[in-house]
Image (cartoon, rainbow, N blue to C red; front, side):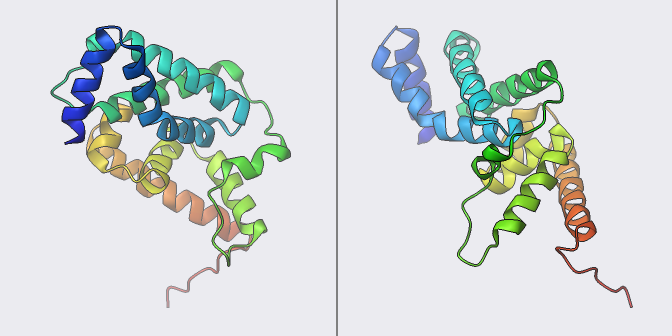
Length: 184
């Protein structure tokens, strides 16, 4: 399966095969860049951090436990680098020009306003909530792999994901984009 392919590819990388390194980067580049872009909300920062992730990944391949899946390990590196970059960067306002890059592709009936408001609401989440939300809903990762990527138990991941959903819903309700349900 893919885990066997990953292990074989890592062995080739450790032997110094450039084609294997290239294949490994290509295998994970969409997932890593997507996570970085959603986390950092800035294309150039995401590109820089993604490059750093792959450098760290290649340098750290000797320490990877081949008994575990490779993708959560790579995504954990990405999540950690994003957190570090965001902390160093401070609170720089997000340029409006980059908002469309941080949004998922719109369905035909999605309004631009709703996509923009979702991006704003997602950006306002705590970084750990945003990370698990993106990994689960946009990258389709299972709870176990998210837990490995963020270094927390599955129960914590589920709690963070639940809280992220509630905060997003509350934010959209406050902006009048989602109707408030009556409890009656």
